[in-house]
Each structure stands twice: as C-alpha cells, then as structure tokens.
Image: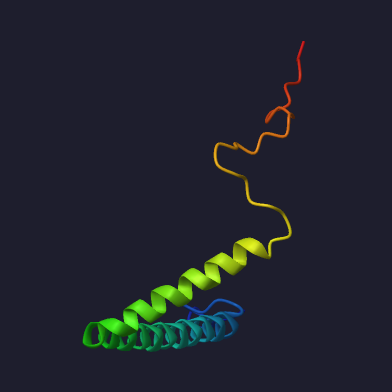
Length: 98
C-alpha cells in the first residue's frame, strides 16, 4: 500500500500543465512588449505631427489618395448618389411554416 504522503498534493500531468501555463505567460509577455513598442511608434508619429503641422496635411492627402484608389480597384462600381444598392431581390426570403 502507498503511504499517505506519497503523491499528496500532486496531480498526474501537473508538470505538463505548468509548462503550458509558463509558455502562455511568455507569449502574453511578448505580446505586451509588442503593444508597448507599437504605442511608442504611434506616439512618435503624433509628436511629429504636433511639431510640424505641414506633415499632418501630407499624411491626410496620402490617406485620401489611398482611400480613393481602394474604392476604384474593388472591381465593381460604387453606388451613385441616391442609390440604395437594391437589385430587385428581397433582402430576406420568407419561408412559410405550417
């Protein structure tokens, strides 16, 4: 027979679980560091925009150009003014249930 202290407080596979928990924490720590680095980069850009308002104008123009090209390259025409995109099909098909 086994004594009362043998295996007390330990579950089978505990070491495997502990390693998985540690690996998960390591991943979270790396992700947090990446988020901090990304935030710093965004703050650097924001600081440059505050220091040089002309840079903000250039970035806004660039974003407008990119957005304009994105709409033209989608392969389908954009709906015109007053168009609701209705192609004649009902938006919901009703199925009678008896």
